[in-house]
Image (tube, rainbow over all chains, first blue to last red; front, side, top):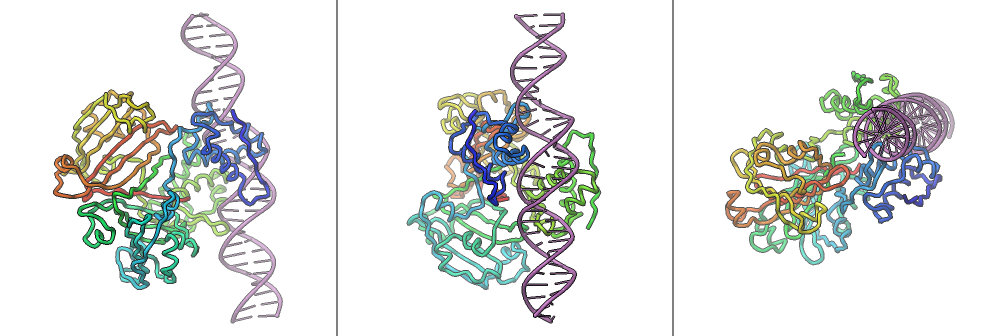
Length: 245
Length: 245
DNA sequence: GTCAATAGTTTGTTAGCACATTCGGACGTG
DNA sequence: CACGTCCGAATGTGCTAACAAACTATTGAC
């Protein structure tokens, strides 16, 4: 068994269990530990690192919850059969494209601070007929038009500018204002494009669209954003990780 | 603040923290506690119930992870602004339809214990060219054909019968054999139907299909199932809950 | 030689304690 | 009356300790 080199900084404000979890994660995804390899047991690791067993245990639990490790009582902990493990996190399309090394570009087709949409208002927890901030964007991947993104935000977000929306993703802009989307409910489907959408996205004849409506919420459950997006199906698919742990 | 009536059974093999978590969950989803209501603090609750604070804390953490509660240091714990909270769990289409009160029906179009598919074999962790169990099913919702479900399983699953596949969902059949899918990676997209698919699903002209490929894994990360499904887009969409906690 | 009891290892659960951090409100001062 | 400071309350982090449960491997009996 490899005695992993771990360094813990007790002066750091980062919790010890999290420091440990991060370094263990790096060791696994970095390939130092391979699937099926036995993992150092909790007692030995806590002795070696001068940490208490609960602290070590909490760090390991983080990895178990992410599916990187498997614990078996009486046997020990082993590295899980690794999947590609691309987590389906709470990111915007913009972030995803950047991560894939593509260069996203955005055209803001419309930006209004007095839009009305009852479905969006309901999701945002506002009475029907409330004025909302509405954004319509055209997102390119490289030079190809990829998606039409329609979004509605609470009226407090009325200081958005076209410029920032064109240089950053919506979620980056929200985070810059201290808004942190934490949970989202997404509904994914498909339909045919309208004539206008076909024109905007340079689509030929009867190519289908992937549709996604998303309601995003803050940490305390208050609604943050409602989105209605459609993507060219030949260039886009959604990857989701479902877990039961 | 309501002092919730909680009863803990120390003779039960169910861990105390889980007993508590279940009863708290019931109290919230049952409406005894309403969104925004303050929650009994950890110290008081542990005193009242005769449990230690870590135990109470672990129970509360379960609810926080599920998004039912919001903890704020210095303030206390409150009930989250409730969303509909239909969790995107690891269920098959069959279970989903039953839960919605519709009556699913299944025709097994093909069942083979010596099928060959390199993409499926790779996902299942077997060398290319390995014989696999292959299932093709046509799923109805009520009287309407809804989806074509193609699935591949490891060769050990060669005792499946057409009968059980037509009366139960695939996941129920797997569970009956002691196989418990725990994590799955799904990729959702859209495309046009082939002529044959259009015939099978009674679709008119150029209606699109929602496609989903799924790789499902056991608790220890070993692959369990690979599926390639397509659904009539006018009757089907996928709901996903993404979380960042 | 085979099978069963047993000892040992490892994770799972629960308890109790100490201190740090953060937030809201009360209090006091200008 | 307004503003800033302090304090208490609640959660966050970390430690020690003990026992339970599950599994392996060895040992012992037949």
